[in-house]
Length: 371
Image (tube, rainbow, N blue to C red):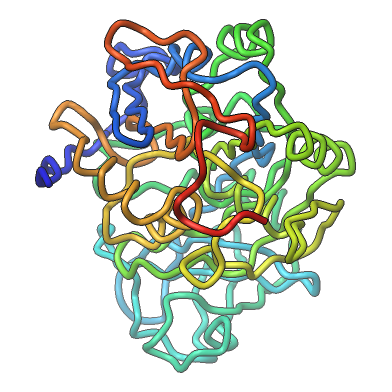
Protein backbone atom coordinates (compact mmCIF):
# COMPACT_ATOMS: atom_id res chain seq x y z
CA UNK A 1 0.00 0.00 0.00
CA UNK A 2 1.27 3.48 -0.88
CA UNK A 3 2.30 5.55 2.13
CA UNK A 4 0.11 8.60 2.74
CA UNK A 5 1.46 11.92 1.55
CA UNK A 6 2.87 14.36 4.10
CA UNK A 7 0.23 16.53 5.73
CA UNK A 8 -0.07 19.97 4.16
CA UNK A 9 -2.20 22.15 6.39
CA UNK A 10 -4.76 24.63 5.13
CA UNK A 11 -3.61 27.80 6.85
CA UNK A 12 -6.54 29.99 5.77
CA UNK A 13 -10.04 29.71 4.27
CA UNK A 14 -9.92 28.70 0.60
CA UNK A 15 -11.40 32.03 -0.51
CA UNK A 16 -8.31 33.73 0.87
CA UNK A 17 -6.25 31.43 -1.34
CA UNK A 18 -8.29 32.37 -4.43
CA UNK A 19 -10.35 29.14 -4.38
CA UNK A 20 -14.15 29.08 -4.22
CA UNK A 21 -15.87 27.15 -1.45
CA UNK A 22 -16.94 24.44 -3.87
CA UNK A 23 -13.58 24.51 -5.68
CA UNK A 24 -11.61 22.58 -3.07
CA UNK A 25 -10.27 19.16 -4.00
CA UNK A 26 -12.38 16.06 -3.42
CA UNK A 27 -11.03 12.51 -3.29
CA UNK A 28 -13.76 10.03 -4.26
CA UNK A 29 -13.34 6.48 -2.97
CA UNK A 30 -15.36 3.49 -4.11
CA UNK A 31 -14.46 -0.19 -3.78
CA UNK A 32 -11.47 -0.78 -6.02
CA UNK A 33 -11.16 2.72 -7.42
CA UNK A 34 -10.20 6.27 -6.50
CA UNK A 35 -10.87 9.50 -8.38
CA UNK A 36 -9.57 13.02 -7.83
CA UNK A 37 -12.19 15.69 -8.38
CA UNK A 38 -13.28 19.15 -7.24
CA UNK A 39 -16.12 19.47 -4.77
CA UNK A 40 -18.25 21.16 -7.42
CA UNK A 41 -18.28 17.75 -9.19
CA UNK A 42 -20.34 16.22 -6.37
CA UNK A 43 -23.64 16.00 -8.35
CA UNK A 44 -21.96 13.77 -10.95
CA UNK A 45 -20.79 11.40 -8.21
CA UNK A 46 -24.22 10.85 -6.66
CA UNK A 47 -27.39 9.08 -7.79
CA UNK A 48 -30.92 10.44 -8.14
CA UNK A 49 -32.69 9.51 -4.93
CA UNK A 50 -29.57 9.72 -2.75
CA UNK A 51 -30.33 11.35 0.60
CA UNK A 52 -27.76 13.80 1.97
CA UNK A 53 -27.97 14.41 5.73
CA UNK A 54 -26.69 17.89 6.61
CA UNK A 55 -25.99 19.58 9.96
CA UNK A 56 -27.71 22.95 10.41
CA UNK A 57 -25.68 24.01 13.46
CA UNK A 58 -24.04 27.43 13.21
CA UNK A 59 -20.65 28.19 14.72
CA UNK A 60 -20.40 30.55 17.68
CA UNK A 61 -17.36 32.68 18.71
CA UNK A 62 -16.36 30.26 21.46
CA UNK A 63 -12.79 31.42 22.21
CA UNK A 64 -12.10 33.91 25.01
CA UNK A 65 -8.98 35.32 26.63
CA UNK A 66 -8.68 34.25 30.29
CA UNK A 67 -6.27 35.54 32.92
CA UNK A 68 -5.32 33.15 35.73
CA UNK A 69 -4.36 34.46 39.17
CA UNK A 70 -0.72 33.76 38.27
CA UNK A 71 0.83 33.52 34.86
CA UNK A 72 0.16 35.05 31.49
CA UNK A 73 -3.20 35.22 29.68
CA UNK A 74 -4.28 32.15 27.77
CA UNK A 75 -7.14 31.08 25.48
CA UNK A 76 -10.25 29.55 27.02
CA UNK A 77 -12.54 27.57 24.71
CA UNK A 78 -16.23 27.18 25.59
CA UNK A 79 -17.27 23.71 24.45
CA UNK A 80 -20.88 23.63 25.67
CA UNK A 81 -23.39 25.19 28.04
CA UNK A 82 -25.15 22.81 30.46
CA UNK A 83 -28.81 23.19 31.39
CA UNK A 84 -28.05 24.70 34.82
CA UNK A 85 -25.96 27.46 33.22
CA UNK A 86 -22.52 25.97 33.90
CA UNK A 87 -20.06 25.93 31.02
CA UNK A 88 -17.83 23.13 29.75
CA UNK A 89 -14.48 24.77 29.01
CA UNK A 90 -10.97 23.96 27.88
CA UNK A 91 -8.06 26.07 29.14
CA UNK A 92 -5.31 26.31 26.53
CA UNK A 93 -1.60 27.07 26.91
CA UNK A 94 -0.42 30.53 25.85
CA UNK A 95 0.55 30.70 22.20
CA UNK A 96 -1.62 27.77 21.13
CA UNK A 97 0.64 25.09 22.58
CA UNK A 98 -2.14 22.65 23.43
CA UNK A 99 -4.41 22.12 26.46
CA UNK A 100 -3.29 23.41 29.84
CA UNK A 101 -3.51 20.34 32.09
CA UNK A 102 -2.07 22.04 35.17
CA UNK A 103 -5.32 23.63 36.32
CA UNK A 104 -6.94 22.81 39.69
CA UNK A 105 -10.52 22.63 40.92
CA UNK A 106 -11.56 25.89 42.53
CA UNK A 107 -9.20 28.00 40.43
CA UNK A 108 -10.62 31.27 39.15
CA UNK A 109 -9.76 32.84 35.80
CA UNK A 110 -10.74 36.39 34.92
CA UNK A 111 -12.66 37.02 31.71
CA UNK A 112 -13.37 40.25 29.80
CA UNK A 113 -15.84 42.82 31.18
CA UNK A 114 -15.37 41.82 34.83
CA UNK A 115 -16.64 38.24 34.55
CA UNK A 116 -14.90 35.28 36.17
CA UNK A 117 -14.97 31.57 35.50
CA UNK A 118 -14.40 29.11 38.37
CA UNK A 119 -13.23 25.58 37.52
CA UNK A 120 -15.51 23.19 39.42
CA UNK A 121 -14.55 19.65 38.40
CA UNK A 122 -12.96 17.82 35.50
CA UNK A 123 -15.48 16.95 32.83
CA UNK A 124 -16.90 14.40 32.42
CA UNK A 125 -15.54 13.04 35.69
CA UNK A 126 -11.88 12.16 35.12
CA UNK A 127 -9.16 13.14 37.55
CA UNK A 128 -7.43 16.51 37.32
CA UNK A 129 -4.46 16.31 34.97
CA UNK A 130 -6.15 13.57 32.94
CA UNK A 131 -8.67 15.67 31.06
CA UNK A 132 -8.56 18.90 29.13
CA UNK A 133 -12.23 19.78 29.84
CA UNK A 134 -13.70 21.36 32.98
CA UNK A 135 -17.16 22.06 34.24
CA UNK A 136 -17.12 25.70 35.29
CA UNK A 137 -19.40 28.35 36.75
CA UNK A 138 -19.48 31.95 35.56
CA UNK A 139 -19.87 34.91 37.91
CA UNK A 140 -21.86 37.02 37.55
CA UNK A 141 -24.21 34.71 35.64
CA UNK A 142 -24.38 35.72 31.99
CA UNK A 143 -26.13 34.58 28.84
CA UNK A 144 -23.43 32.57 27.10
CA UNK A 145 -24.74 33.48 23.66
CA UNK A 146 -24.78 37.21 24.37
CA UNK A 147 -21.47 37.21 26.22
CA UNK A 148 -19.62 35.29 23.52
CA UNK A 149 -21.14 37.49 20.82
CA UNK A 150 -19.61 40.53 22.56
CA UNK A 151 -16.26 39.13 23.66
CA UNK A 152 -15.60 35.87 21.83
CA UNK A 153 -13.81 34.99 18.64
CA UNK A 154 -13.80 31.83 16.49
CA UNK A 155 -11.68 28.97 17.79
CA UNK A 156 -8.49 28.57 15.79
CA UNK A 157 -5.38 26.44 16.13
CA UNK A 158 -1.70 26.97 15.48
CA UNK A 159 -1.72 25.90 11.83
CA UNK A 160 -3.78 28.97 10.85
CA UNK A 161 -1.77 31.90 9.57
CA UNK A 162 -3.83 34.53 11.36
CA UNK A 163 -7.24 35.50 12.75
CA UNK A 164 -10.38 34.43 10.91
CA UNK A 165 -13.85 35.94 10.78
CA UNK A 166 -16.88 34.20 12.22
CA UNK A 167 -18.46 34.01 8.77
CA UNK A 168 -15.41 32.03 7.62
CA UNK A 169 -16.54 29.32 10.04
CA UNK A 170 -20.14 29.07 8.83
CA UNK A 171 -21.57 26.56 6.37
CA UNK A 172 -24.34 27.35 3.92
CA UNK A 173 -26.61 25.23 6.16
CA UNK A 174 -25.89 27.24 9.35
CA UNK A 175 -29.21 28.17 10.99
CA UNK A 176 -29.03 27.32 14.70
CA UNK A 177 -26.06 28.77 16.66
CA UNK A 178 -24.38 26.36 19.06
CA UNK A 179 -21.24 24.71 17.65
CA UNK A 180 -17.97 25.61 19.34
CA UNK A 181 -16.17 24.48 16.20
CA UNK A 182 -17.50 24.46 12.66
CA UNK A 183 -19.14 21.27 11.31
CA UNK A 184 -16.56 21.61 8.58
CA UNK A 185 -17.64 18.85 6.18
CA UNK A 186 -20.47 21.13 5.07
CA UNK A 187 -18.26 24.12 4.35
CA UNK A 188 -17.52 23.37 0.66
CA UNK A 189 -21.22 23.51 -0.26
CA UNK A 190 -22.34 26.67 -2.05
CA UNK A 191 -25.80 27.89 -2.99
CA UNK A 192 -25.07 27.18 -6.65
CA UNK A 193 -24.01 23.62 -5.84
CA UNK A 194 -27.15 23.02 -3.78
CA UNK A 195 -29.29 24.04 -6.75
CA UNK A 196 -27.43 21.59 -8.98
CA UNK A 197 -27.85 18.77 -6.46
CA UNK A 198 -31.60 19.34 -6.27
CA UNK A 199 -31.78 19.44 -10.08
CA UNK A 200 -29.92 16.11 -10.15
CA UNK A 201 -32.58 14.48 -7.96
CA UNK A 202 -30.57 14.42 -4.74
CA UNK A 203 -32.57 15.04 -1.56
CA UNK A 204 -31.21 16.98 1.41
CA UNK A 205 -32.49 16.57 4.95
CA UNK A 206 -31.42 18.47 8.09
CA UNK A 207 -30.25 17.26 11.46
CA UNK A 208 -28.74 19.31 14.27
CA UNK A 209 -25.64 18.56 16.30
CA UNK A 210 -23.80 21.28 18.19
CA UNK A 211 -20.15 20.28 17.90
CA UNK A 212 -18.01 20.78 20.99
CA UNK A 213 -14.30 21.48 21.23
CA UNK A 214 -12.20 18.98 19.29
CA UNK A 215 -9.09 17.26 20.59
CA UNK A 216 -6.36 17.94 18.02
CA UNK A 217 -3.55 16.95 20.42
CA UNK A 218 -5.01 14.09 22.48
CA UNK A 219 -7.28 12.63 19.75
CA UNK A 220 -10.04 11.84 22.25
CA UNK A 221 -13.44 10.61 21.09
CA UNK A 222 -16.15 13.29 21.17
CA UNK A 223 -17.90 14.16 24.41
CA UNK A 224 -21.69 14.31 24.77
CA UNK A 225 -23.23 16.85 22.41
CA UNK A 226 -26.72 18.26 21.86
CA UNK A 227 -28.55 16.92 18.83
CA UNK A 228 -31.95 16.75 17.16
CA UNK A 229 -33.34 14.64 14.33
CA UNK A 230 -36.63 16.16 13.09
CA UNK A 231 -39.64 14.00 12.24
CA UNK A 232 -39.41 14.82 8.52
CA UNK A 233 -35.75 13.80 8.39
CA UNK A 234 -36.50 10.53 10.17
CA UNK A 235 -39.29 9.88 7.67
CA UNK A 236 -37.02 10.62 4.70
CA UNK A 237 -34.31 8.32 6.08
CA UNK A 238 -36.79 5.51 6.55
CA UNK A 239 -38.20 6.04 3.06
CA UNK A 240 -34.73 6.01 1.53
CA UNK A 241 -33.86 2.75 3.26
CA UNK A 242 -37.11 1.09 2.17
CA UNK A 243 -36.53 2.23 -1.41
CA UNK A 244 -32.95 0.94 -1.44
CA UNK A 245 -31.50 4.46 -1.70
CA UNK A 246 -28.26 5.58 -0.13
CA UNK A 247 -28.11 7.71 3.01
CA UNK A 248 -24.97 9.86 2.90
CA UNK A 249 -23.96 11.96 5.89
CA UNK A 250 -22.21 15.29 5.39
CA UNK A 251 -19.66 14.95 8.17
CA UNK A 252 -19.28 12.85 11.27
CA UNK A 253 -21.51 15.29 13.18
CA UNK A 254 -24.43 14.56 10.86
CA UNK A 255 -23.66 10.83 11.05
CA UNK A 256 -23.55 10.95 14.86
CA UNK A 257 -26.88 12.77 15.04
CA UNK A 258 -28.71 10.43 12.68
CA UNK A 259 -27.22 7.28 14.20
CA UNK A 260 -28.23 8.54 17.66
CA UNK A 261 -31.84 8.33 16.48
CA UNK A 262 -31.46 4.80 15.09
CA UNK A 263 -32.68 1.70 16.86
CA UNK A 264 -30.75 -1.55 17.05
CA UNK A 265 -32.53 -2.62 13.88
CA UNK A 266 -31.60 0.59 12.13
CA UNK A 267 -35.04 2.20 12.31
CA UNK A 268 -34.88 6.00 12.52
CA UNK A 269 -37.27 7.91 14.76
CA UNK A 270 -37.40 11.60 15.73
CA UNK A 271 -35.10 12.26 18.68
CA UNK A 272 -33.40 15.11 20.52
CA UNK A 273 -31.34 15.77 23.63
CA UNK A 274 -27.72 14.93 24.42
CA UNK A 275 -25.95 12.07 22.69
CA UNK A 276 -22.91 10.25 24.02
CA UNK A 277 -22.86 7.83 21.08
CA UNK A 278 -19.37 7.15 19.76
CA UNK A 279 -19.30 5.39 16.42
CA UNK A 280 -16.49 2.89 16.05
CA UNK A 281 -15.69 -0.82 15.89
CA UNK A 282 -18.15 -1.63 18.68
CA UNK A 283 -20.90 0.48 17.14
CA UNK A 284 -20.76 0.63 13.34
CA UNK A 285 -23.20 2.73 11.36
CA UNK A 286 -26.67 1.26 11.03
CA UNK A 287 -28.23 3.84 8.74
CA UNK A 288 -25.49 5.85 7.02
CA UNK A 289 -24.09 4.32 3.81
CA UNK A 290 -21.64 6.99 2.71
CA UNK A 291 -19.83 10.02 4.01
CA UNK A 292 -18.58 13.44 2.96
CA UNK A 293 -15.70 14.25 5.29
CA UNK A 294 -12.70 16.50 5.64
CA UNK A 295 -9.08 15.49 5.94
CA UNK A 296 -7.83 15.21 9.50
CA UNK A 297 -4.82 13.61 11.12
CA UNK A 298 -4.92 9.83 10.55
CA UNK A 299 -4.36 9.26 14.29
CA UNK A 300 -7.35 11.39 15.26
CA UNK A 301 -10.54 9.91 16.68
CA UNK A 302 -12.15 11.30 13.52
CA UNK A 303 -10.68 8.32 11.68
CA UNK A 304 -12.42 5.85 14.00
CA UNK A 305 -15.73 7.57 13.30
CA UNK A 306 -15.41 7.39 9.52
CA UNK A 307 -14.26 3.76 9.76
CA UNK A 308 -17.61 3.04 11.43
CA UNK A 309 -19.27 4.04 8.15
CA UNK A 310 -16.81 3.01 5.45
CA UNK A 311 -14.78 0.29 7.18
CA UNK A 312 -11.07 0.30 8.14
CA UNK A 313 -9.82 -1.01 4.80
CA UNK A 314 -11.69 1.65 2.84
CA UNK A 315 -10.42 4.45 5.05
CA UNK A 316 -6.85 3.16 4.85
CA UNK A 317 -7.05 3.05 1.05
CA UNK A 318 -8.56 6.53 0.86
CA UNK A 319 -5.92 8.09 3.09
CA UNK A 320 -3.16 6.31 1.16
CA UNK A 321 -4.54 7.86 -2.05
CA UNK A 322 -4.35 11.41 -0.69
CA UNK A 323 -1.65 13.21 -2.64
CA UNK A 324 0.62 16.03 -1.55
CA UNK A 325 -1.69 18.46 -3.37
CA UNK A 326 -4.44 18.00 -0.77
CA UNK A 327 -4.79 20.36 2.18
CA UNK A 328 -5.93 19.23 5.64
CA UNK A 329 -8.11 20.54 8.47
CA UNK A 330 -11.31 22.60 8.51
CA UNK A 331 -10.40 24.91 5.63
CA UNK A 332 -8.83 22.17 3.54
CA UNK A 333 -9.94 19.57 1.02
CA UNK A 334 -12.44 16.76 1.36
CA UNK A 335 -13.29 13.13 0.65
CA UNK A 336 -16.43 11.37 -0.55
CA UNK A 337 -16.52 7.77 0.69
CA UNK A 338 -19.05 5.51 -1.06
CA UNK A 339 -18.49 1.93 0.13
CA UNK A 340 -21.21 0.51 -2.14
CA UNK A 341 -22.00 3.07 -4.83
CA UNK A 342 -21.50 3.94 -8.50
CA UNK A 343 -21.27 7.24 -10.32
CA UNK A 344 -24.47 8.57 -11.88
CA UNK A 345 -22.53 9.75 -14.92
CA UNK A 346 -19.35 7.64 -15.19
CA UNK A 347 -16.47 9.55 -16.74
CA UNK A 348 -13.84 8.00 -19.03
CA UNK A 349 -11.52 7.89 -16.02
CA UNK A 350 -13.97 5.82 -14.03
CA UNK A 351 -15.03 2.20 -14.71
CA UNK A 352 -18.79 1.80 -14.79
CA UNK A 353 -20.19 -0.86 -12.48
CA UNK A 354 -23.60 -2.49 -12.73
CA UNK A 355 -25.95 -1.91 -9.81
CA UNK A 356 -27.22 -4.74 -7.69
CA UNK A 357 -30.98 -4.47 -7.03
CA UNK A 358 -30.56 -5.82 -3.54
CA UNK A 359 -28.74 -2.90 -1.91
CA UNK A 360 -28.50 0.86 -1.80
CA UNK A 361 -25.34 0.76 -3.90
CA UNK A 362 -23.48 -1.65 -6.13
CA UNK A 363 -23.11 -5.08 -4.62
CA UNK A 364 -23.07 -6.33 -1.05
CA UNK A 365 -21.34 -4.52 1.76
CA UNK A 366 -18.48 -6.75 2.93
CA UNK A 367 -18.13 -4.91 6.24
CA UNK A 368 -21.13 -6.13 8.16
CA UNK A 369 -24.15 -8.43 7.87
CA UNK A 370 -27.28 -6.98 6.33
CA UNK A 371 -29.76 -5.47 8.74
